[in-house]
Image 1 (tube, rainbow, N blue to C red):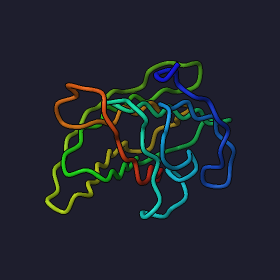
Image 2 (cartoon, helix red, strand yellow):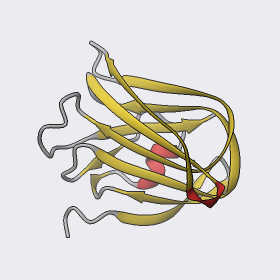
Image 3 (cartoon, rainbow, N blue to C red):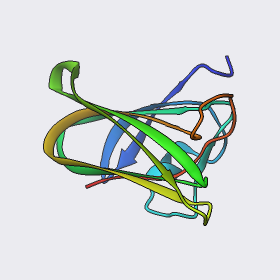
Length: 138
C-alpha cells in the first residue's frame, strides 16, 4: 500500500487536472503547482518519484520545468497527445552546489494531453525521499 500511487484533482494554471503521484509524507500535491519555490511535496518512499498529469483538454506546451530540493536530480519526461499516443520521451540530469536543482525541457509548441515525470536522485538505486518544489508549464 505504501508504494501504491495516489490520484487527486488539483488546479494547474487555473484549470483542474488529474494528478497520479507517488505517496507523500510531507506537503501536498498542489504545492508542486502553486508557483512558490518554498513549498514542496516529499515522497514517502519512492526514487524515482512518479508525477503523471492528465489535463482535461490538450494544452499547447513549449516547455516543462521541474524544480527539486536536491543537489543532483534526473528527470525522465514522457509526453502524450490526445488518444494516449506517446509524442516524445526525454531524459535530463542536473547538478547544483546550492542543493536546489532545476531541469527544463523545451518542447517547441506541441498539443499535450498528459505528462508523465519520473524525478529521482542521479543513481535511482534505492527508495528514498524526493523533494519536488515546483512543476511549471509554459
